[in-house]
Every structure is written in C-alpha cells, then in structure tokens.
Length: 250
Image (cartoon, rainbow, N blue to C red; front, side):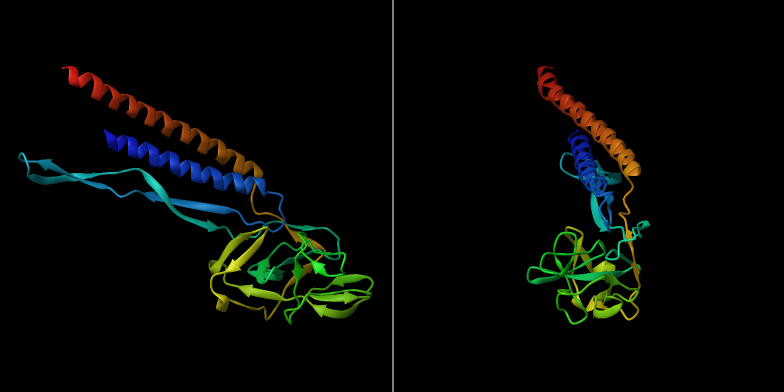
C-alpha cells in the first residue's frame, strides 16, 4: 500500500516542477528574446515482484510495479520567436543561433535581446544597462557622435559612417545555459565563435517564443493533475490509517 503513496507523491512533485517552469514562461511572454523552458519526465525505478514460495525464500518473478514518475531533463526551446518591426534604429534581431556579446561584471555573456540603447555615458548597452562589446571585445562608446544607427552587418554608424562593429557570435545552443535577464553562459567556450556571416535585422526585435494562452491552458491542466495526485495521496493515507487502527482489532 505504501507504493501507492510513493506513486502519488512523485506525481505531485513532477507536476509542481512543471508548474514552476510554465509559470516562468508565462511571466516572460512579453520579454524580448526570451526562450521558454520545457521539461521531460520518465518513469521512476520499477520494483520487481516475486511470488513467495516459502517463509523466507522467493519464488518466480511475476512482473514489475511502477513507483511513479520523476523529472528527467529541463531544456531550452530555441525555436525562433516572432519578429516585429519597431522602426527604432537601435533595435536589432538576429539569425538563429547568433548572439550579441555583453559584459556583465567581469564575465562575458550572450543575449538575443536586441532592444539596445545608449546610456548616460554614451555606451551602447542592453535594456538592463550591460555594455555591448565590439569585435575587439571592448565596449562601444558613441560620445560626440550623431544619428546613431546599426546596419545589416552589425556596424554602428554615425551619420552613415561606421565607427564600430557589434560582436555577433555563432553558438552551439546545446552548450548554453540560462544566466537570467535574457543572458546565457556557455559550458564550453570552444562552442562559441565569431560569426562569419552575421545577420542583423535593424529596426526589428525577436519577441518571446512563449505563448500566453497556450501556457495558461497548460497551467490549468497541470493544476488539475496535481489535485488528482493529491487526492490519491490522501486516499492512500486514509487506507493506511485504517489498516493500522482497524486490522489490529481483528
């Protein structure tokens, strides 16, 4: 009977983990360049069942009994989000698997959030104020320059004259992990290289690939599944209580 408790409990834990991932996706449905998280699950380790043939010996095998479900993997869905035209000369979207390079503290991180701006120090920065780096790995400063725009190769222009080039890298997305604030870090530096053919679309942004309505429907389904597993756990607990209090009276 305890096996029923384990199965129901693992089901609740799995649904809770999925609910957290879905809620994160819904919350970032309007975040520029956001990539949603997805999860996979697998059956928990099964228990082999054998027929008892004596007081202390085991008989022939009669099959297996599952112990519920458990989280297998969490991965990033790299499917491209919709591209919207903004007309803003500092907005850019990129080809798949290409990333802008930003300086975050002492680290170099990568992002597809192309809603760039110029800060109070005349540096080209991300929406959260992190310096965008050029092909030499240095921050891009436009002090004293006018009419700043960005072209299809990532060149930063002033009055249509190039003054710097944004560093655009090509990355193996299987080697990237989320850092937060739409940034990614690599687990293998060799998997990130300077893009030989940077494809920058000025005046446009890649939106989140998370769909609000789809996410809300999944959240409702997960919530109901959690409630069902919870009821199953409560039922198993009641049966165990009856077994320990009533059977002993017989």
